[in-house]
Length: 329
Image (cartoon, rainbow, N blue to C red; front, side, top):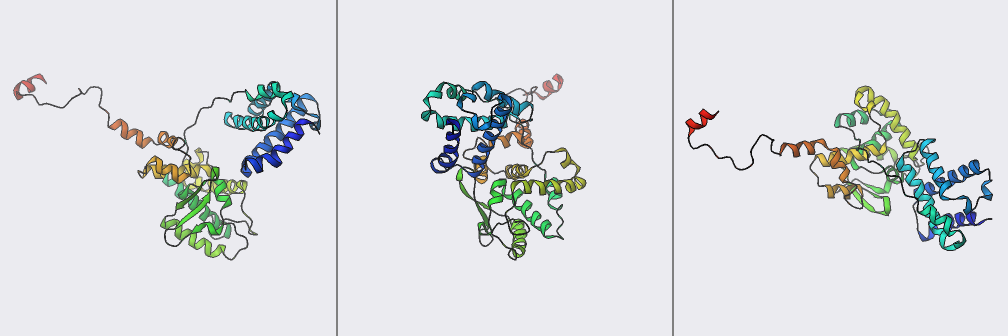
């Protein structure tokens, strides 16, 4: 086993779990990145994956891999930067143990990320939300489950990973109804539920209790729904919702769009940005500031408070001679 293979095994079996305690999603992302990189190097250099060492992971080859992701696989700049982070994380950990490859590794660590433009946040209007919530067929178990899932997600703004990990013990419908979750960065938070959501979840849990498993939103045999399953169910309901509300068809709607919708609803209700950041589980308000840019109502209110160019500044003073003033008109 060569040095690169040893470093990869050490990183993913020891360092990522024990020392960094990375989340399962992060480890999966890093693993997939290295799988794609090794396959790319094998195809490009004609060297078997088991024979690849640090001397193959050069800045030129890594840059070629990143360009391959962007131009041939159609990945955007954000995904490209995420893959670069995964590569640099493993190499940065391996650098102290392999000084003989320091020059090669250092050059890769110096590769700058691609500058990105942050797109405007896309969210659903109240009419579009209503069309989506009535789309599931509530004559079936899966329809009632999906209706409850969408209702709670669009009200609470939970991330898709948080929804997947919820158990029946995480939701409390008594006094002070809320849902508890452990979000990004292992930050625990509690999100209150509205009366409408409580009613929907109460009816759903009464039926959910007859099925096996502990997952709040489960499959036919009680197993937790995966991220892909949630996106698949949402895409199915969007087709029906677009019939009643055609404007949905013009939007790229994912589970994360429902999170944006919850944030925009709070902003429209006059909730402070710092409170919305706590609601969504953001580490600071910088991530939440993006919702201010997306809210045209706030921008319109700001421009309505400005002085038109033709109006002179200062406090209005009436003309002392009304006849002279009328003459000057």
